[in-house]
Amino acid sequence: MAIVVDTCSLVMIAKNYLPLDKDGQLYSFLEEAFSRKDLMLLDVILDESKRTSKGIAVEKMPFLKDKKLVIPTKDLFPCAPERFSNMIDNNFCVRLKKQELTEEEYIEQKEEYLKTGDAKIIIYALNVRHSDAIHLEEMQVMTEETRQQNDGKLFKKLPLLCEQIGIGTLTVSEYLLSLIHISEPTR
Image (cartoon, rainbow, N blue to C red; front, side, top):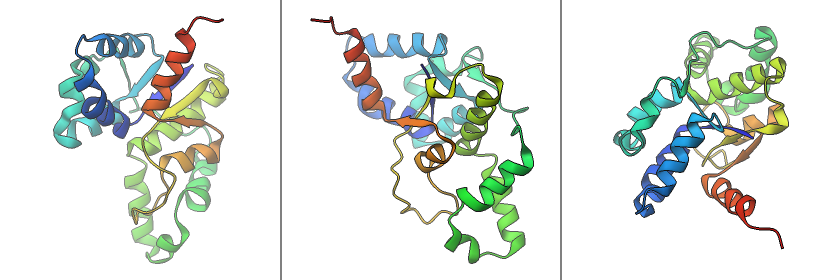
């Protein structure tokens, strides 16, 4: 399974899980998982992580800075740009918030949104779907975001966007628990 990790998940791991990792097993496991591309890190997520919570994720997991682990997004564009643009306008934005903006304000915010980690994760997932490199059923997004739209932002939260395109999500704890179940001996 391939899992694209978002910024809030990296921060969660750094703040809540690594301090409990006294023997370094979790750290080593995560480093290997990113090396194998079981966990995938987009460059925009790495950049966001450097600016979020004083860069704690990168401070606690310096291996994230290894360029071999990071998936570049500079040349990442939607397979069907017009269709994706319509998807943003009709499915990804909060309509009430959109109605409060002028057309110019909306276009400006949409352009900024397309540079964010959430948008790049969605574009990456859609491109994977079209490339058949990874079956979409085998891909998930790790996020700590809730589905509740309570932050007053113009665009919906990542779990809702993933649902829109048919990709699963899981939290850090769900991911770690799934590993325990996988490694348990069968009876």
